[in-house]
Length: 284
Image (cartoon, rainbow, N blue to C red; front, side):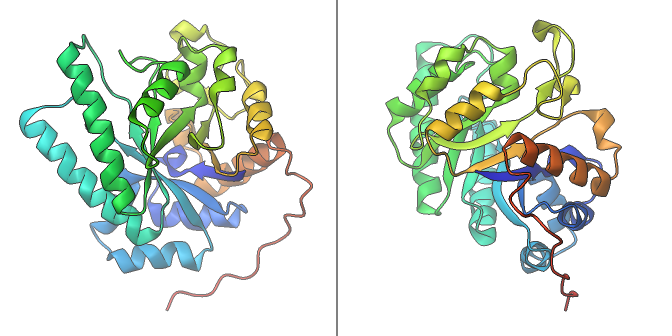
């Protein structure tokens, strides 16, 4: 498993600061929030973005997230798919192997909507694979379909394209209708990315993104998930993802050190010899 931090954990900071400060805190991998990347590219070239990660020896192992592909229609659908193509180019250029795809089908769904959802997944997986990127479908506990791990696994299997896998966000697993037995459905083949957070001491029915806290520190520790990941020899990314406005105010250097230490301890990697990083070269 590759421990990572989602740059969304420091949403209010600039990407350049985040990458430098996370690297200083011994974070080697990030789940890149696409809003951060696109903001950075407003003032910098794609080459500068690649150099940012290279200079600090940080690898983006996933990008989060692409929405609007599943059931949108008309102009909105065309806009979402155009943005998707642009983001595939971005992932390809940065060597990011996984793009998280939001399972954002909300509201009543007709048979036509379900058919559109399935065909959209197939087409998006094909386009992603053509770009050397794998999509990771993230079910949303608030969505109409899929809103749980069992349904998400079934949907991915029904599409049956190697360019499509699963993103398991532990928050959505914990607050939604997923069941512990569903974890047995995870395999090294269908799981493409993992996002971790714990939940503050609130009823799960009332939990919101603002109640996300560091994994292992709240009411929904991911112990069962981590055991399953070990059983299937999962070798992909495990990223802390906290969309908590209170934590966005924490300086990225401080957050990066605390979160990386907590995640590696949780993954059983605290004693793997992570010593001081070598000096970082100065930008050209």
